[in-house]
Image (cartoon, rainbow, N blue to C red; front, side):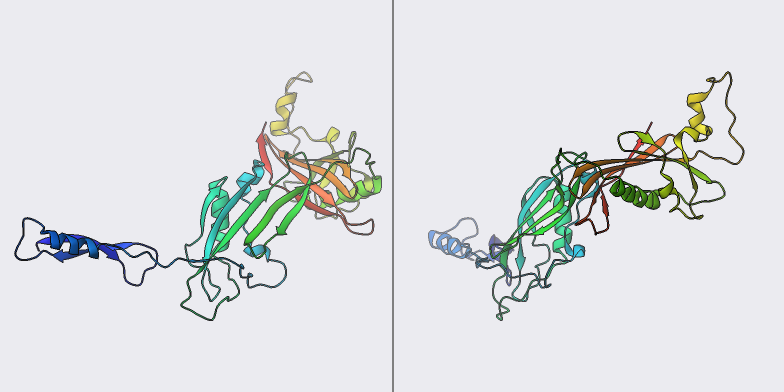
Length: 331
């Protein structure tokens, strides 16, 4: 076919794209364009602007009532949390009159990390807003969205879980992560509180008794290195391995490496023992109703450690332990 290829808007599409169409050339001239033909061709190639999206004036509320379910919030990427990386995602999404989010409409022109963007994109795909118009032909709303991922400046600073919804008529806004707790230098350790926290930590981390695991070595550090108090040991039933002080921790396998030749010859592993688990717990008073906690579990040549925060609302309330991502270290 002799002719030209021109652009025109695709039918039924409002995104501003074009499709290619062949237009037949006038039969009387195949080698040149008469002036009137050129004017006609120029006229049909003018693409009318697509209808503008309705800009948000009042953001429709998300369809759930009350607090936003955790399952629908963006998740803090574990690899960024363990590296203590914080940041912000700023973008928007399209919402149809029915309240449904237009698939693939989320965009984030400003983001501090692609993993944050991916987390928000996954969450947005599960959202649904309240219907905002009875006119199904109305153009979709473009709703602004901001998600802040927040952590304390250092992993040595305890924090409490943060899930704050600041959404208003201007758009959707969440703050997620952990809110740092300001340290009170006047804070004095409460021995009863520390024992309660220690008992909770030991019950959650002590290894279970098996044929190969009969004992585990344990210590807690609160100003000094000490074995587990008898009140804490008594709370472990027979299903747990028996705790022994670090000073009596069996020298077996990899832990023997540091002792070879120390007593005139190589140590021989006691019968029935493997390398025992070694549990260390650090508890430090931080602020009223808050303690900083570090837990380390070691075996062989590796150690997994995690920093936690123990908080309670009042003296009559139970302690709640919140931990960040664990870190594994080979030593």
